[in-house]
Amino acid sequence: MKCERCGTEFNDQERTCPNCGLSVTVKEPETPEQDGGGKKKKTILLAMIAVAVIAVCAAAAVISSRKDPKETVIAAFSQWMNAGEESPSEKIFGFRQFANELGTKNSETSMTLRMDGSTGIDTSAINGAALRLETKSDLENQKLGMDLTAVYGGMDFLGMNLYFGGRELMFASPELIDPVLYLDLGEGLADRLAASPTIGPMLAEQGQDAEEVAAQVDQFFDQAEQVSQNPLDFAALIERYQAGCKAQESFKAALTVERGEKGTFTLDGQEVSCDGYQVHVSKDSMIEFLRTSADFFLNDEEFRSQYLEQLRLSALLMEETLDSSLGEVLTAEELLEEDYGDVRAEVDELIALFDSQLTDVDMTVYVDSKGRLAQFEGTTTILPEPESGEANSDLSFRVTAEGGSYLMENWNGELLISQAGESVAITFQKTGSYDGSLAASESVLKVEEAGTAALQIVWSGSYDSSSGDFDLNFALESPEDAPVSIAGKGIVTELEKGTSITCVFDELTLNAGEESVTVSGDFAYGPLTSEVTAPAGETMDVLAATEDDWNNLLVSLYFKFISLIVGTADLS
Image (cartoon, rainbow, N blue to C red; front, side):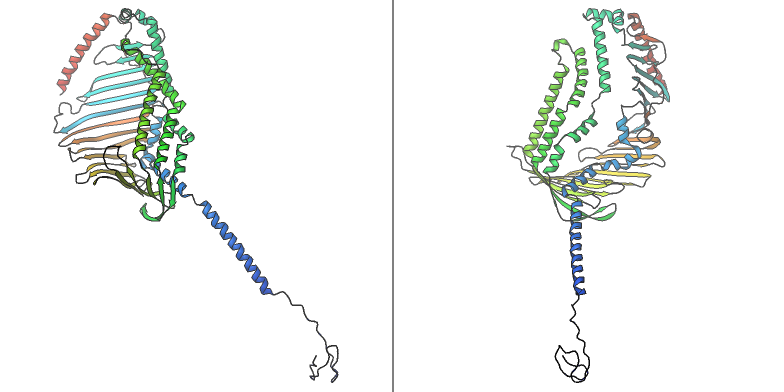
C-alpha cells in the first residue's frame, strides 16, 4: 500500500502511515454490477425472435388465406358463367322472373300483328289487315279463354272465341255461325252420349259402349290435371344434380392447376394486373364427368316419375286414337323403358365418340384481384374417326372479358380449327354500355374459312328506360345467299319488372335481298285482371243436336262465309 500524502510504502495490514501518521481507509473490492448493455442485448434478441415468430405466423396466415389456385380458377369460371344475371336487360326487365312465372300463375296476353306494306312484293290487297290474339288463363279455377280476331279495312270482320272451363268446351264465331257450340264432358257424360241423336248411333254402329267412352274421357281429364299439377320440373332436377351428383366434385378434383405468369388486361376501361394459372383438363376426367352426369339424370327417380305421368297421358291418347289393327299400344311403363333405353343408347354412343376423339385440354387462365375472369385461352386436338384416313384437327380458343357495367358486357373470343393445312376461324365480338338509363349492345359473329368470304351475323339493340324507346336489329350476310335483315323500333309503355310488360312495335321490317315486308303491332303480358268468361249467346249442345240442327248450321256457315268474302272484296 502507498501513502497518499508522502508516498511512503507500507504493508496492506497497517492502517496508518509509519512516516507521517496519515490514517488510511482500506476499501473493500466492489462486486461488479450486471452490465446494463447486456440486458439490452438480451431484450433486443428476444424482440427479434418475437418479431420473427410474428412474421412467420403472419406469412403462414397470408398463405393459408390465399385461395388454392384450383379454387380461384373454379370460382372465376363460376362467376363468368353467371355474369348474365347482372346484365342490364335482366336488371331492367327481369326476364328470369318472367320465365319462372310463365305457366305457373294466372295471366293474360294480347298480341297484334298488322301488315303495313312491302317492296318487291305486291301486298296491297292486305295492307292494313291485322290479326289480334288475346288469351286469359285462370289456373286456380281451371279456366282458359282465347280470342282470335281478323281485322280488315279498319274493322273486326272475323272473330273466333274458344273457352275451356272445367270440363266444358265452348266455341263461338258470330260472323260464321249463329249459335255458340257447347260440349259438356263432365258428370253424366255417359247418359248424354247414349241419348245423343248423332253420337249415340255412331257409337252403337262401331260397337262402343257409352259408359266405356265416358270413363276413358274421365281418365284423360284426370290424367291431364295430374300432369298439369306435376309438370316436368327441370329446375328441381338441376338442383338435385348440383346437390347430389358427385360429377362436378370429381371433375374439379381431377383438374390440375398451377400458378403461371402474370398478365395485364383491360377491365372496365382500366388496365389491371392479373394472376396467371396453367390448367390441365384430362380427357378421362371429361369422359367420367359426362358418364356420371348422364347416369344421374337417367336414374333420377323423381324425374322418372314425372315423365311417367306425362307418358300415361300419351299412352291414353294413342290407345284412343290409333286403330287397333295397327297392333297393341304400349303401356306408359313400357313407353318409359323404351324412351329411356333409346336415350341411354344415344348417350352411350355420344360418350363413346367423345372418348375416341377427344384429347386433353391445356389452358391459361387469368384472374384479377377481385376474382374476375379476365381471359382464358387453350388448345386441344380432336382425333379423326378410326380408319377414316383424315388428319387430326387442332383447336385453339380464347375468350377475353372487357367488363363494363358487368363483367361480360364487353368481350370477344375466337376459335380456330386447323386440319391438314386448312383452317376455319370463328370470332365473336360483343360491345355494350349502360349508364343507368340507356342500355345498348351489339354482337358480331363471323365464320371464315381461309380463302373465302365470311359468314357474318350481327344483332344489336338499345333501350332507354327513361322514355321506353327501343330498337332491335338483326342481319345475316352469307357469301352464297342474299343478305337478310330485320329492323324494328317501338316503345315500352308499361313495365313492372318480371311481372308485366306492354310494348308497341311502330315498325318491324324484314328484308331479304331486294324484297321487304313491313309490319307493326303490339304485345302485352301480365297478371290476370278480369274473369275468364264463357262466350255470350244462344248455345247449341253438340251432343243433344239433331241431324237437322247440324245441316242448318252448315248451310248458315256457307252463306256467312260467302258474305265475308264479298265484304272483304268491297273493303279492298
